[in-house]
Image (tube, rainbow, N blue to C red; front, side, top):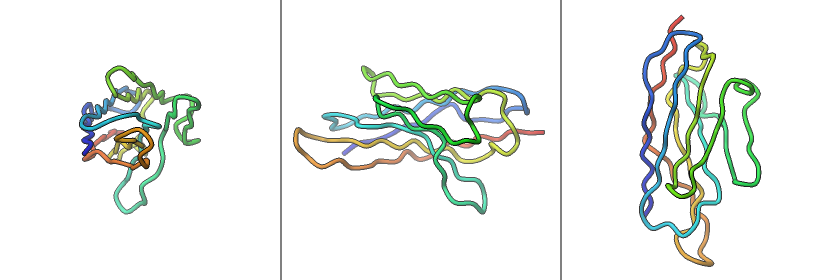
Length: 120
């Protein structure tokens, strides 16, 4: 079993910055990708940024403002968010694609979510 624990959410004024962290633990052989999604009230969950180690992809709405990084030694992914806007308000979820053993299937795991609120 794999657990993802997120931290770093909170309340910030528009134009401010926040840093989210997500640490994976448990039975991990390899992590193929780690990323961040968000879900605002009444909206579908959407991709924010994801890193496969080979490539990194961002939603158009966050390009130039958010940066995703990974610390593979710590099985941790970070999301540096700057120039935050009220429309960035959402619950942010971490996702990881994990193999638990050599030649095993890749499964996706989700964190519990962390609230980010940007006031105008």
